Image (cartoon, rainbow, N blue to C red; front, side, top):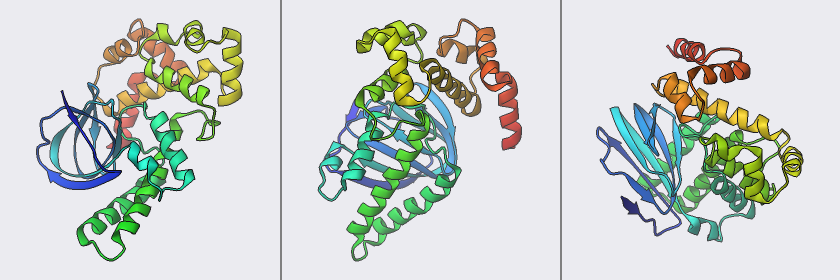
Length: 282
């Protein structure tokens, strides 16, 4: 397994490809990938999802990533590392937002843009960054830095969509760590039982429930159920996995168990949800 290294605060590059280099690698930096045009599949940590125009992906240093191209694709890449945090030109608020991204980057694979309006906002920013990189006009470095900051703040807003409403960059580190623990262990039902989360963080089960509700605005079980449901939805929308495969991946006893859970959450079966999405996308 190769490891790519970034030696500067951030790096921007863009290219048009028919075949993505066949190299699975881990990095020492974070990477935002925006799809300007084209279609294909993105594989991250052995999970693959369809991509198309205006999709954006956030890759973390722990991720193993590969793209499979179906039609010629224009990629934009923004790579940034911890050095970026130490840059004196970054405001305190932006540092906090970037730390917030890093703390919560263990999110659901796939496009991170949840706000439809942000999809239309991100593209002009990306295109402006490309123009600045190509033209290198006067003050291009200053303009590029401002655009990068804006891009990262918008990404932070979309990552926040994965979190309970009360969670933001000012939240206590312990509640963020609990959320990260749940996200990291969501595929292992035994690990996210209340007693095991309590042991991991040194809480009593009763106190954990009260603490989580106070700092997140919802119950622990509600958060787990909602997070698991959106994982299921994402796979139904953006992968061709059979429902039995999704059930196995997410720790359900069988397809029937997943069907019962999903119907209780969304009022329809996974099969009906997938069919409805396909019809709406046609």
